[in-house]
Image 1: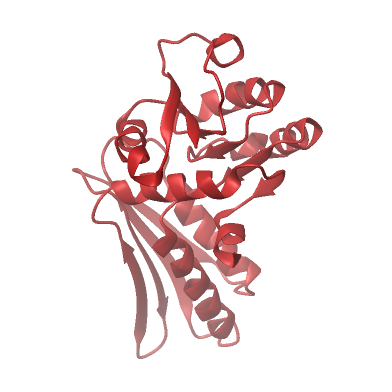
Image 2 (image 1 turned 90 degrees about the vertical axis):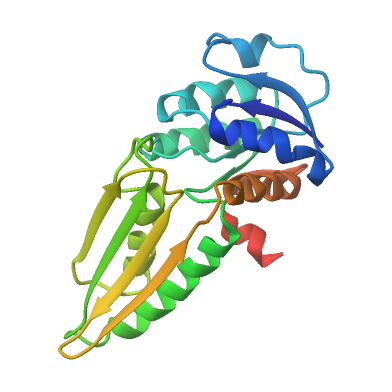
Length: 227
């Protein structure tokens, strides 16, 4: 598997270092010094899939160039979802595969399923309120996190129609902690997922990239977990 790596910050560097252990090599690296047409004009040889860990504004610039070159892409950047409808249409017209996720931890995505099941059951009991709190390092730009928003949307889709309070903390070097809580008259239930090492996101992205090779369509981690 030959990967075109978009973004060479902490996550991009982790993907690069872990790629050989997934039988992958880096066909090329695009960073903030590469220029806006670096994907379109670059000579990378064979590319099986791109992995995008850039910035929200860059995602919408990257996808048209990838689509033009028929390169599938795993998107790990968050904060661009307002443009998702247009990007889905573009990917469909080009016939490429896109796997986009707010969190590439496989454990987090199983955690999401557990949260939704709890929400489905608590939805029937009006005396239980719900909240989400997430903590990340000071360098994370978006707050609340894309993962927190995904958790909230999943809870709503599971039938929990009451307000869900969402709060965020940005401090130190926390890789990522998400807690979902339900509180009733005499008891509190908390479900927590804690990341110990940011490498979990790079590993998940590499697993997703291997799964996406040769596929067409718009996918999520849930599609991967079904296989």
